[in-house]
Image 1 (tube, rainbow, N blue to C red):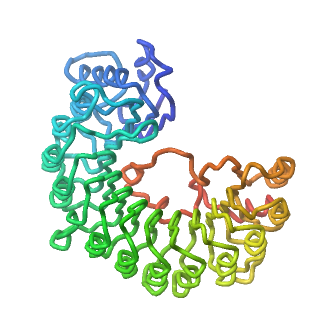
Image 2: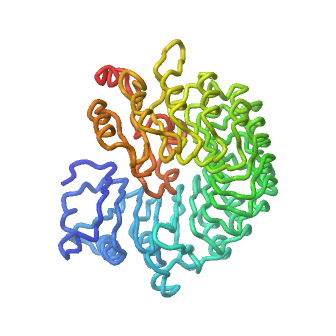
Image 3: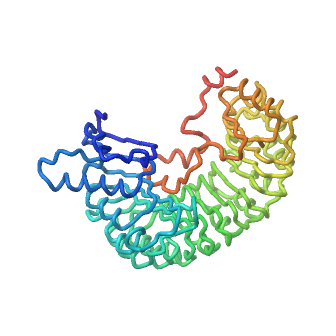
Length: 481
């Protein structure tokens, strides 16, 4: 089956392979396999396969081939529940793990603390050999709103004592963990570079109160849906001058002063401010700041107006910015897009979805946008206009060749004339057209643990304009033309 060691990714639903002989499929797998990523796998099947791996280690001459070889260093799995038994089995079967990425997607609340959920006792079993460098434990909200209700600060404190070598950690759905637990991680892991907390309902500014007294050098930070975090906490966090990626989506207590502190970061390239209460003043801070921003997301920042665009593009940002999300900003009109066009900002991604005042005039302006003497909207690779109120069939002619020669992703409302839409697809075979409201550029899935997966490759974070992992080549553009 597999002749060489290395990395194996299986994007399969393993519930379809519930057969007693399934483990024999792995009989020819290389025992040098170091990285394994699997799609959804039922918890009981997973525990059974881990039991085979444990037994094969304990019994000399055991011939039944295990799925999980002791040489495995990186593991990424999705199950219905993360439990204490699962953590214990992984820790016993795979003593050399350096990367552990687990995500569950429960369709109902766990029935008990011991059988179907993770507890403080389970967290203590993580990293028994002290080799773990990247840890991701995510409870997905895909089906219902639930969390790890049986984990509190004590569990995080005990875990952090055994995980002092961590370089990145992603925690999602730990609703009972407070500042005490999160501070324990920060103060116990001096080599931590990447920190991600999702739905940290008890995380406050106190987490970063004395961060300047630590030796931390954070480069990637995500604090999504941490609604108690305010400008004060972000000001403290900004003492990390090496911050490269910062995601503050739906931190609804953040305002202009937080952005003012961030505008002084000399290496900040990706900033997500979706759903915050910032105003045009925040854009003035960024425009006058030193951040070499390549990607900026302002989705749902309802207090922004057209005036925010010239303020943002007043300084060096207009030269470095490649990806801009201005979706769901009700007061935004075609005039704002005209400013972007006149500034000749080399955008390759522009998202304008669900803006009622954006219309055909924006499409026409972008199609004729000049950059370095080249016309026809030459830089755009992704344009999302889904559910923009002013887009009509007249806009379709501006998507015909040779206009937008590098466009590879286009989002439009599905109610437009289907015949014209289909005709556009036929004439532009390299164009991926989305009319159902789906997000463009990447498949729809929870990517909460991505930082832990790609610890050596930040291209997805730092070069978001390289969509789907492949930059558009000149040869491909020539072929289409």
